[in-house]
Picture (cartoon, helix red, strand yellow):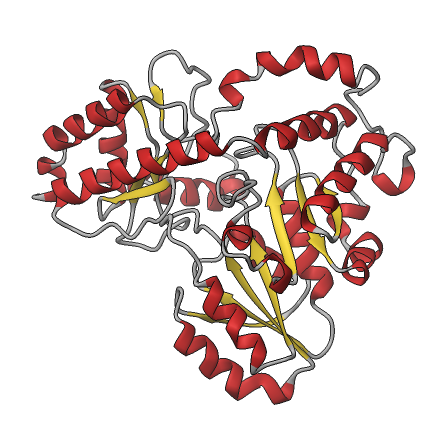
Length: 384
């Protein structure tokens, strides 16, 4: 064995011993009901329906942009997509290659002098990486703890020209919501406050038009920066940031993931235009998803005897350790349900879990069957 690789073998061995060794799942959707993907509106499962419209409306949408947006003139459909998103949010929009790129690029660009970031402890890893890239000053507050957030604001507000509060609308591991109304209320007392909202798991799902939690609460105009993804509920690829003109212009000129990445293929931008147009009128699917989520949540609470804090289509079932999460996922798969284990460092130690990620195309019988299976399987995991 090459001794120069020793440390890597040690890392992999430790992950294996702790039940945290990951591998890419097999690409096989035939054996199970999908409870792991982010295809919340069921659009990915219907992708063939949109192929004809895509080819008829955008016949010249190619599979490569050949360069970054700043170095290529193949961005016609990127611009059209940005114009569509801008018309929905009434602010300028900028497309990124992924939600990860959007958060890293935006956070690092905003990390200028006299700026403090206050981040919810459950914020996505891409935000943490953006803080690191930007060498930002930041503090983290306990999850959804507005009292602690305000205490930090009161202490730090006079020391910084701007304070950026970073939260997610729907948290990707617990499925609960940010107390957005309370956060917006803080702007009355702290005018230097900027709200950064990651709507990755809410875009397409929440609000009358599917624009997210801010739209649902009537607070879109009060949220300064909104990030949304196009690869989850929209079944396409990429992400967007909407903000004031000056912030979007800043990103175009300073965001490294935007400047130095070959941009999305034009065909992806064209597909996203179609998907957004479909999404705007999918209220029935949004209501259906809400009903299915409520049924599963209540069923899990009944089986476990514990409250489930989810308020969305993401519903966690905590097993307490990685080994149990892996074994339960394996048994669910054997029973026809594809629900993958979530382990640290994605979640804190002791909160390892199965994360059920629902979509509107599921049947009532699917939820009933899942609950029946859980009722049979869970005793040996919860009572060990």
